[in-house]
Image (cartoon, rainbow, N blue to C red):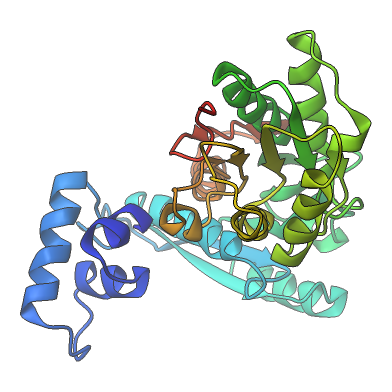
Length: 329
C-alpha cells in the first residue's frame, strides 16, 4: 500500500478507501482512477478483494496487542493477520490491552467462551515476555515477542541479520569509516542491530572505531546531535548507519547544516523503512521490518492442521537500497 500511495501521490488512507470501495469519502474520480491504475501496475490487491471460502462456521482468530498508536508496525501486523485470515475464510478480532494483565485475562476468558480458533499474543516492541496463564488454554502463537521458556511458537524480526546486511551494503559501496548511531540501549532491537553491524565489520576485517559509535534514542534529535558529534572529530565517517529512520532524518538535517552532501560526501543508512524514507532527498536506503509478513505467518499457524511446534522463527529483514548509501565521490 505504501508503494501505491507513493507512486500515486496520495496518502495510504486514500489508497485504502479507494481500493476497498469505502463510500462517501469525496475522493475525486480522477484520484480514484489514478490509484486504481497504479495498484494494477504494481499488482497490489486490497484485503477485501475476492470472497473467502464458504465454511460451515465462521472461524475467528483473536489478537492481543499491547500498543498500536505509538508505532505504525502494530497496524502492519494486524493488516497481515487480517489479510491471511480472510483468504482462509476467517476473521480477526483485535484487542489493544495497554499491557494490563486484568484486561488481557478478561479478553482471553471471553474468547475461550466464544471458542475462537486461536490467539496471537503481540507486542509493539520486540522483547521477552511472560505469557499470561490464560493464553495456554488457547491455540496460540507470539508475534514480535517470545517466551523465555519457549513453550509457544513465536516470530520476531531477524534484527542481527538486518544490521549485518545493511552494513554489508555500505561496505560494498566502498565505505570504510562507518559510524553507527545506537537506539535506546534497553531495547533488543537496538542491541541486535548493533551486533549485526559489528559482525559484518568483523567479517570484512574492518575495525569498529570506538569514537564512531554514538548513543541515540530512536528520535530525530538524537540522530542530529550524534551526527554533529561524529563530524566534529578528527576521524570523520564516510558513512553513518542510524539504528532507525527517525534518527536518519536528524542525521540528514545535521549533514545539510554542515554543508555535506548525503549520498555523495557522506552516505547514510537507516532502519525500519518508514514512509518518510522514500521522501527524503536523496531517498534513504534502509532495512524493511517484515511486520505484515509476521502477521500473515501467525494466521497460517493458527489455521493450519495439527499442533503448533514451540519454536522461535526469525524473519529476514531485507535491505531496501535507494540513493543515500552510494559510494562517495
